[in-house]
Image (cartoon, helix red, strand yellow):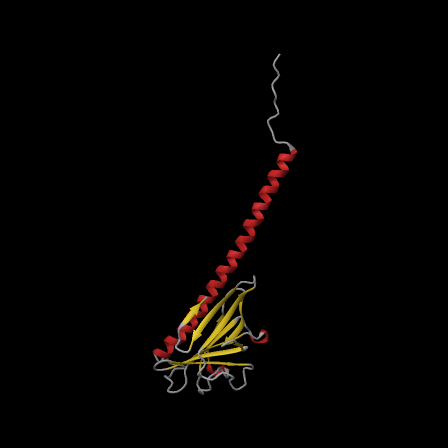
Length: 191
């Protein structure tokens, strides 16, 4: 007599091993998915900031009006801060009406906005020296650019208009960083 083995299923051990393998692969994919999202968010924020810097360069070249008039002195600028108490997640676009080389008051404000989702400025470096505040101002008609940094938003500048280059470090809440370099000729590089 021939007996047929009708055990056509998985054993408990096989089932547990299969579930464990699926769980491990899923956790690896999930972790990489979140890291990829952070990288894309950081890339978008860096490109947004570069776009805003290019915007003020264009405003200076075209003598864009500020408050309804073409200004004869001053220039278009952007302000950033790495100081946690002064909104390191934001940028400020302004017109330097008093030709002070920095953003002084709300009367100079043109617009402001977030740099990016979950992204903030964590370091601003002038030739290896960190500063918590940064202004880049483009003066028409060239446009000539002035890069300034200070330890306090109301202090006199520590760096003169002869500063050659500034590095702005953006950091995503997930820990990834990206560095934007701007030199006194207005050239921008994103690392």
